[in-house]
Length: 511
Ligand code: UN1
Image: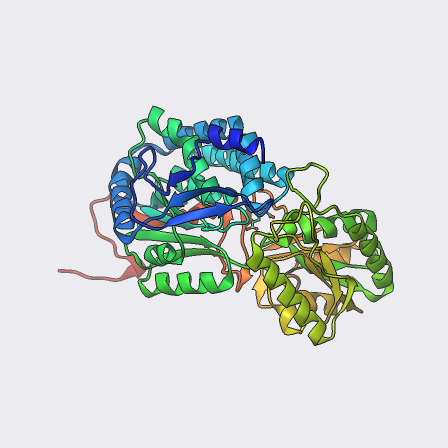
């Protein structure tokens, strides 16, 4: 694609790039070459030289050393450095957003939106750097004072997924940095170039502020690099975003060494549509949730649980809306749906469609593979809708593709039971104008997900809230609210400013 070359040049992306960096310095690493192909048109965008095990070891050593300097810089000063990163991201928003769109296949609007999330988290982290608050407690002993404080953990490993190739890194790293940690990032092997671009964008900030090598590292590579991070006792926290099997294996390896992990795994997100729902609001929310990012968000809407009385109406309105979807080059502003990440994802979509048929599902909007120009990369699919039953194996499973399941319900209790009856627990929503339905959905007896919305869809969460989910989604929380606490260790301090030694619980011990 013309225009992309100019953007690559501006972002410092060459044909072959160093895939191992410790901030400003890039390393001649010994791993294999990893090529990145755009799902938009199949073009080879460039390649990165991956990390060999020895490179990984040296990076973590450099990071561990840098931690000693970085943690001694006052938190608000670290916040100021993160603020400057936000300024740089504003400057490069168009270029980075375009590369995100070209390397992942998401629409340009969504690529730009992802960079906006990065900018927003920089602002959030800057403010947070002055608010890493601990509590004070009243001691039960005279002339004693108790309080708690939060200290940085050390090296934070970040494993990110292809679908949000840069925002997820920034949610983790910006917060981790103001907390005083250093970061080692293993980007998705499907989107290695956007990661290199991020490092280039922040390089001047690192240099101008004399940030030591090792505070912001990248180790490019595949599953093996993720395993090195998970098994490495020098890595205090491993934050991993991706599939449930990936998270299970990272979580198990980190738990074996009693390390900390923060897991952000799959979702199987549902929207309940009640009889009082305002369909003018609900229909676009459902369509965006189901087909946005070609159904490849962990928050994508996968299941639609619709009341019997409006089932046919919702079905026909959705079929009409799907009929208007434009599938094509996501960099074209008139396009709604871009490609999936690669041809393997297309095969998974086809397998899912096959399983839906075998289970007895019927398609309201049929699946398909568009052919000819501009679909020659072989990564494009047609968003589809199927009438199914919630308990079917394929419905219980997260397929990362634009497949929307329609499920019928009769009473409110049944709707909530269906919504919760999947192994995952990330995002959920209800469309209703009935106060009781809404409050019931948000109550302890309602949605069991980490995110529960009323009259907005399941995807597109703002960075100000804590992001994450329950059950097989992994339990981690990232981004806003007090998610920063996962990146710090809590220390409880008791100080005796008297001349006696009263023991807690009134214990007498005299010598
Ligand atoms: C993801 O899909 O991994 O809520 C993250 C959303 C985005 C983040 C999605 N803010 O859809």
